Length: 439
Image 1 (spheres, rainbow, N blue to C red):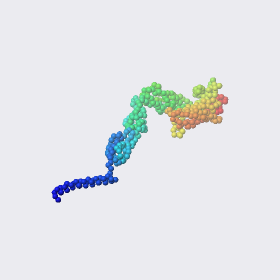
Image 2: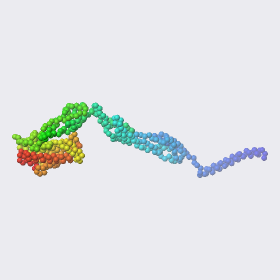
Image 3: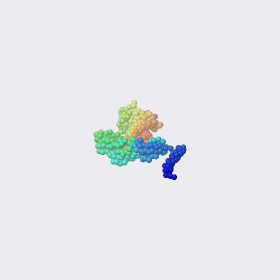
C-alpha cells in the first residue's frame, strides 16, 4: 500500500470508532429508558427540633420518606414552684418525613415537696414536716414559749415568721409572740394550803376573790364537850388596795367561837311572849321573804335547823336547812373530792311537806364547778320522807359527780328525817296540836 492510502485509512478509522460508540450509546440509553428498575431521584427536607420555649435545639436534613433522628442534647424544662419536669418524647412521630417538619418536646410533671422546719426562740428544732407544693403546713409540735421578763409576758399568737397557708419553698420558721403586761400568781391559802390561785397584771390591785369560800374545820375540846368553830372573816391584806409586783400569797383569816358538842337534847325550848318559839343558840334568818326563828341546830355538824314563824295566824312555816362539807366520789369511783360545800334548803308547811320544793347545791373547791338539785318531798307514810322529781344541772367539769351527788342528797334527807322526828318528840307540846308534816 502506498503512503497516501495508508494515511487515509488512519484518518478515517477514529471517525468510525466514534460513530460506532455514539450509536452504541444511543441504543443503550433507549433501552434503559424502557427499564422498570431505574431508581427515582429523592428530595431532602429540613427537620427542626424546638425546646419548651420554641427556640431551635437541633436541625437536620432528612431524605423524603426516611425517619428523622434527633442527635442534640436531651430537652429539659426548668422546675417551677409547684412541679419538676422530665422529657416525655416529641409531640409527633419522627417517621416517614415528607415535608419540612418541626418537632416540639413534651414533658411529664412531678409535684414538688418542701421541708418546713419550726424552731423556738433559741434555735432549737420543735417540729419538721415535708409538705406538698401548694398545700398548707400545720404545726404539730409543743406550744412555743418565750420566758417572761420583769415587765412583760409573751404569748404565742399561733403565727410564724412566714405564711404557711400555701407552701412553695423550703421554710425555716420561728414563732411570733404577743407582748403583754406581765401577770403574777396570787395564791390564796388556809393555814398555808392553797385553795385558789388567780393571775393579776403587774401594777394592779389583787381585786375580788373568785374562789371557793375558805373553810377551816372545827376543833373539839379534849373533854369532848365543846368545840371551837371557825368562821371566815376576810384576808390578811386588802384585796382592793394591795398592788401586785410579783408572785404572792394571801392568807384567810377566821374568827372563832365555842359551841357545845352535846346537842343530844336539842337545847331548852322556850316560848316568848309574842308566841314565837325559839331555842339555843337563837337568832333569825330570812328566806323567801319570811323570817324564821331558830328552834334547833342539830348535832355532828349536820346543822339541822327547824325555823318557826311564831304568830298564831302564820304558824305553818318551817325550814329544813343544812350547810356543811362532805367528801364526794365520782360516778365510777375513780376520784374523791374532799371538802365539797353542801347547802340544803327545804321550806315547808307543817301539814304539807309533801308539796315542799327543796334545793341542794354542791360547791366544789378551787372553782371547779357546782351541782344543783331541785326536788319535791314525798311523805312515804308515818315518819318517812323522800325526795322525788329530782332535777339536776351542773356547771364546770363536775358532771361525773352528779349520780353520787344525788345519792348523797338522799342520805341528807334521811338524816334530816331522823332529826325531825326527834325534834317533834322533844318539843311536841310547843307545836300546834295538829302538827304533822308527814300528811
